Amino acid sequence: MTSDPYQPAREPLLRHLIGDVLRRERQAQERTLKDVADAARISMPYLSELERGRKEASSEVLAAAAGALGLTLADLLALAHRELAGPPRIASVTSLTSRRNIHAHRNGEALLLAA
Image (tube, rainbow, N blue to C red; front, side, top):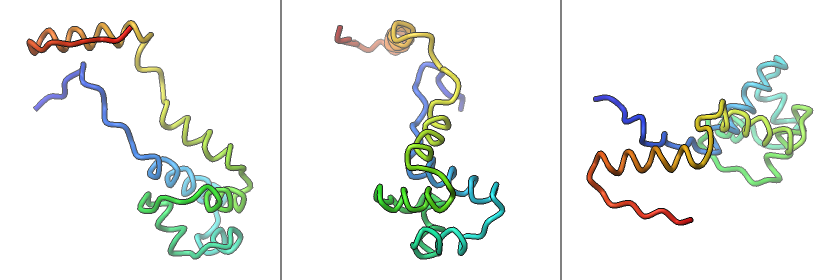
């Protein structure tokens, strides 16, 4: 089965993006889970769950984990944003609208677009 190039890709979960950033930053600093968890004053198992994207953390916990890595919450979110945004996928909203119109036409569906 081939994927439809006109169908938007599934959006990743924010907790997965943030977890990936936390783990990558910790490993780049060659630090252990225990070391970072102690510095952030959170449990090691909880930090592990965050890194694996299994827990949704509060902004306070994210700020503490980021701080333990020498980052601000803004830094953490900016790094996650870079992963989420990636390279531009469309040239403009008009381009996206055109792709959706083509997709709808191919499937014989009616499509209403708000201006």
